[in-house]
Length: 588
Image (cartoon, rainbow, N blue to C red; front, top):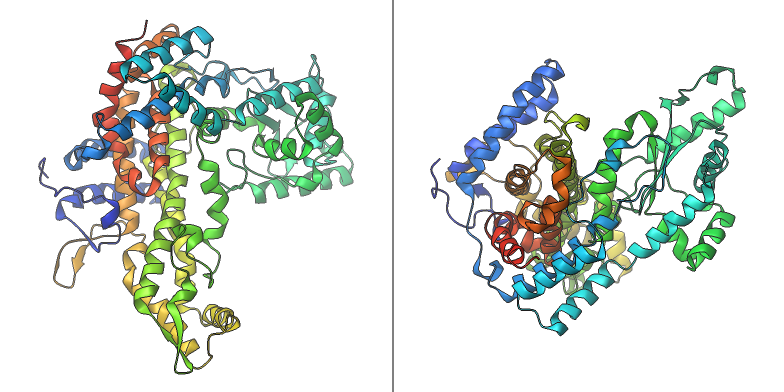
């Protein structure tokens, strides 16, 4: 594959459902397919699979340069759109250090959090210097800067409440952070679980609370546990089983995860926190829901950087939480009113594809396909935010591991924590493809699901004659029309049917775009210096800042997720450096 051999705009939102990819993409798909095979095991020891995965990933990132494309004119540095969103991104960056830089409580020994290198110190003088340089670099008027600040203030409006709540939670533990108080605090969130002093550790950072318990399976890994009363052990076992069932990535309370039962939270605790923060109890409880998690004590190094510095800013400075809240709805059976929720206001409802004609129900296939395209694009957008969120969290892990080599983080990936995890992205992306296509699969082949929709449409007044046939036809028609949305294989197979090129799918296109973003993130990691003493000055050369890059890409993405996802690599590769250079030249 030679540079320039691939036509422009192959990975573009307008071509999402096209059935083919150029033949030149075959080497990339082959490498992805090989990486997927290593993930499956094939009888090889994990050490050997990791040894093979690393050079394979390196080859993937090098090969991606062959499909890089220029930035569209409307997204370039000189555009008015760029000027607006980049200004806002820098104003978000100056708040990044507020997310987790203060550890007010740490009984687990969270060395990784204490040593996480923040690129821009959150002190007022530094922030003022960067803001002044930004204003000069982009010739911002006082009103333009104030307008951007107002927008950013709104976006980060819960940041100060979270910081106040963590201070109030630390006060609950007292200066000595006594073991019995740790247990009491955990019980304030999870109910009367019979833990004893010594069973619970706590970490409280600027915007997050983590509980840790020492466990092996459903048993506590503490001396003398076998001698505890059976009723006590049974209650702990039941609690830990409930925790395990709730520990999924699909969480309504992003960036936190795992078990949360509002009814078990202590009203007395909520009332005390409300009094200390001058916030309403309902607001306190809703905010706390996004702030706490329970983790196995032995895994604290693996989780803390990823969750605090990887995910917390995605909610505090961005809006990934809205996509995560929609995830459970992706698998819900297709209903008559579906369409606008995922497709956006103005998208047709599924019911609009059926109409009464001469006493019978007929299918309007053009209307059906308009519904399907809008609805699927919206579902794909929601599903795409999950692997993208994980890519950004892995990027912050990799930054930490490169800047603090002696504290390199453990990982379940075949690729070291010093790099992005392409293998985990395959898994994450496929999981979301299967989730967003599940309702369509059922409607296409499941008579019971078709009968359910028939009844729903009949209740809206559609005639029963022809209705069942129209619904069955609709399920098949959606499947045929959007076939590339449903395929989740990776092998680079010919398109078939006499068509040139490779068989395409939404899954393949999403993965290829994610890899392009990873390749640019890897280039940024190449500028990270393993020198703790050097990090304080990173802000003086913003292009060296991984924090700014990831905040900027996220903010760009969220301005128009469906379009900008496909341009993130171009922004990182072509526009980010010159924009940073303009700010750097004016930092004093």
